[in-house]
Image: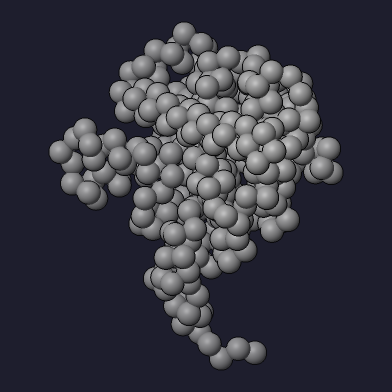
Length: 337
């Protein structure tokens, strides 16, 4: 029998180890070597993370393989680049899946954020690439922007194809309600980007800014648990460990390797701030939103409107940078260089 008291044992445990008892910890990175160190359950990627990883020498073989695949598929240059991009995203996902027990999130091109049918088509293409590599769709979450069209694409993928979706770039309560009603698997409210907006657009003190972002996610979590929605909440885009610890107890939290490192060295006590019991006791009313009401409610939230648009633009810009890099490498391969 151990002679170490529970309090002392807790002090010996890192904040990361304590957090894992209350929340599923997810690594937010395309650098799968970083994933091994922190042993998360799941991992998430996005165009910006893949772009950063694709520039690293360690991953050039994946870029080269994807380019060969894209060229072999044939078609126009645009089709070859699109096929290369999808293959590259899945190749990173496959490497990540070798290092985690759970699921990887792979994102559909943000430039399709307002085209429901094209999002569904690209998502099914990504799933087909995973299945060709022997990975069942249960181990993949397809990331879609939380526009109305994206949410309806998520609904169709879940209902008709059994494809699990991770709704990203989520900032408003209206987006969260629409996602729950669409019965998508998971949502990713962007905690840090909410904080960024309040910091840039208000005179609030830093602790008030953090509080706003935490309150936003807490309200969504409480609404979901109070009314027994099956969609789960994964806080994302954290700027500091304070935000992470303030959301301990959330279903999942996706955290960058830098912050995972800080949490692993932090030995302060982590207690669950979000619980089903608290959610059941809160006084939130159940909300239903059709398309018109969704668009109005979302539009009333200036922060959410601006951050959704900004997020789509930034992911699209990084996708274009990645395409440019691929086109140059593709040209070299075709010219025998």
